[in-house]
Image (tube, rainbow, N blue to C red; front, side):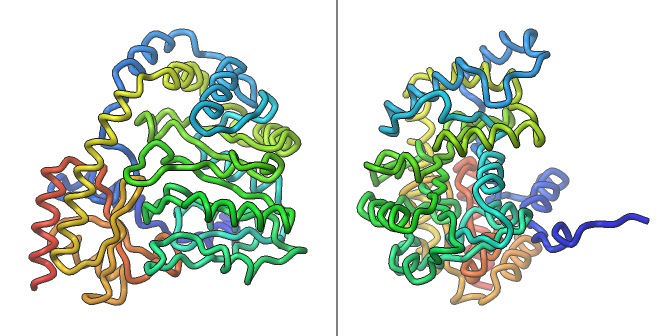
Length: 382
């Protein structure tokens, strides 16, 4: 007999995995679904990967290599204005693992974590796998999909709520949370003695707003866990390398649990990560400059053809309103794929309040984006 747990059976059937499989099998499909950079890893990073590859056959420490953690400390102090010590850092297999570890160590069964909705599709399953209760915070288009602190105040529970997840810049909406809003969220966290889990995977991919880490605000050292990644900034998705910075006691607990999940982030990736943090800013600026041009194009075209799209301030996604054409985003995306061979992600992948929207990634060559927009326009006219 083969038995599958109820918690696994209740997980959402993610569309993205199916899309990746389809686009590999059918090269005529233009995919605007991928959530990773289309750029190659920067040349200096590739050079170091080759250099270190022959000396990486052993495990690293579960919490991360000391030299990498020290490099991370320099980075977060300089770029994020966060002061921390080595004991405040854990290196993980991508920031997603760090979020899972933090949830496992900070919340017990039936306690609550507030989750923005729509938001990154990995949050809800991670929380539910641990039998923690997610409380959705609706992000509204008329507020540019920014968290409204008043909504937090309405549903926070002093006994059950233990954490608030925020994501800035946001996947899928591209919203960058303003500093004054972060300050309000910080006040709520302190008043209610809860954690803020701040997912900052797209911190370097910003366009029109200044990005601020909530962990840099006064008095937040005991309340904020900052999650960052090498995947988006350095086009290192396949290296599976991320980290968290937070209160020492929680980081120690996460490190203990890490031994029973993946043990340690890959040694090769950690050694390369040290060098990635030394990468010249010009490589990142060039990549973000190209994203900006694509963003401006796709947002303009979407609005021209009748799909209302707010210009994202960060990340590399356009989140478009399709309600004038179809109320069901999954049906819209399926019809679009079948009739035009353009793949997009239905908004319901990101939560119930994503219904009526689609996410289009512009981490795709501009020529492919142009053709996809032409096909989409014909689809809407027919």
